[in-house]
Length: 485
Image (cartoon, rainbow, N blue to C red; front, side):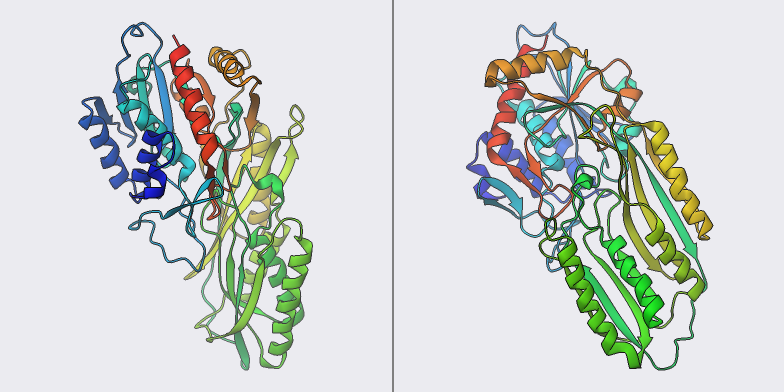
């Protein structure tokens, strides 16, 4: 457990966050963190159970004099995004997160930190174990596998929830209250083929690596215009095929649906007589990218080297179809909101391109505040990949969260914030998938809000959380709990 974190305030929150960092909990591997949460609640003598979806629910009675007040749900998800730099040795299924403090921020050593949503979890745990906090009935809801498809929220049953007010602690800018979010859907395109064993005589293999991009959250950071490793690699590959008779053997770009891909790798073959020119072309493309993203990216690396001759190639017609579809499809911000011009309405993230034996898989995450625009963009991308000969499937469709400007909890939290800090919080809608939309559809009648401390670069190894904002977030939460009745 990090001793540095134990010296921060509020001590109870940081103690619990440090404990969470010790437990491996990437999406899809929830056994240890589930056991931790269950034991935490039971050791406090609180009603604790795991529902059929794998969510953990812990209930704490109201403090004296607040028994008649409305029940409050403190909601967070217990999985984290497992992203690391290519030069970092870390097994997310076995290793703890190594934290450090830098200039007033907590971050990790070459990996994601898990403050998304570990700070929300730690806040709920600190409230559950506290004896000096005034509140009505409290229900801590820890949901499973939010980052990979919001599966815990999707399968949540109304009968398992008693509270009427939901505080989702999964937003990432202190002083902002979120009342709406985008919906999303995953699109998978599959190119199947029989491997080509005929390596052109005299060809040499070139291993290509695009690294050093910032990546980030495919909803929150999509508006920043950061480089998408898959799009940039395939832009180069199209030129390589056209000008150097390159043949594609394999590709591996991106790792998670909801992260802008930071790295992409490919192996190609080219005629030996043009290999030196091709390597020079790679150097020139690196400089082109550096110039193109000069104000956005600061560590772009695009390298090539002679490699081992591959055992097979992707058939030329399939190779061309994959390249043309990826180069031709739209990625990034498609449309800004007409009601809130600074908010992204619709976007796509070309998250993963990966070849395996007899298959190239291309994975998108499509987001929109507008259900019709989400459907339209999904249909457009489906058309591109269907025309290219791919089999297209959709999964993990989830609704957005319609804003309620007349929300009672919104009014109360605005009042508390202004009285406590002397200025109004911003009321926002976010271009990311919060669980509120899903939970609200499964548990009708909830009054919901999402908020949190200030974080930067979630879903990337640059993820960090601002220490001062965590203390402010904690104080604000306790005052809100005191006021709810």
